[in-house]
Image (tube, rainbow, N blue to C red; front, side):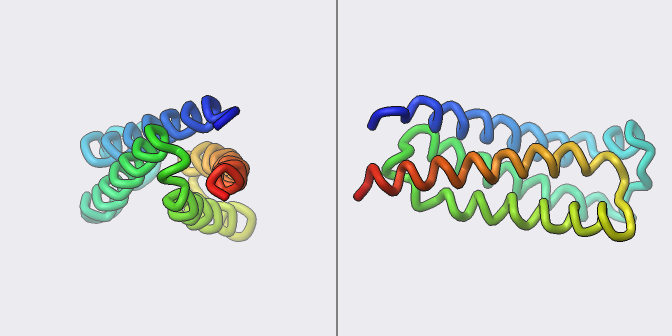
Length: 128
């Protein structure tokens, strides 16, 4: 498929991004909360489980990057992850407030969401 290179690159970047954040929140959650001056939750599992989910989604993005046309049916699940995170962060950001540590990731996820949507539409056309 033409123009598939940017889609592969996008999902390789998404893999690295989500897997890196997942590992960071599993192994270095205390350091991250301290760095951003945010009180950590009362148990590390509240942060480690979402970190593990980020690694799982990262692996899915890696699969999409390797075989975009064949794996395009997975993209909506990645989009839903981005919608879920953005919806929660932006809702709190614009209503009652949220610590600044969460905001850059919401902006990045919004960009990923839009690009995933464009990639999905292109890949669906290629499969048709």
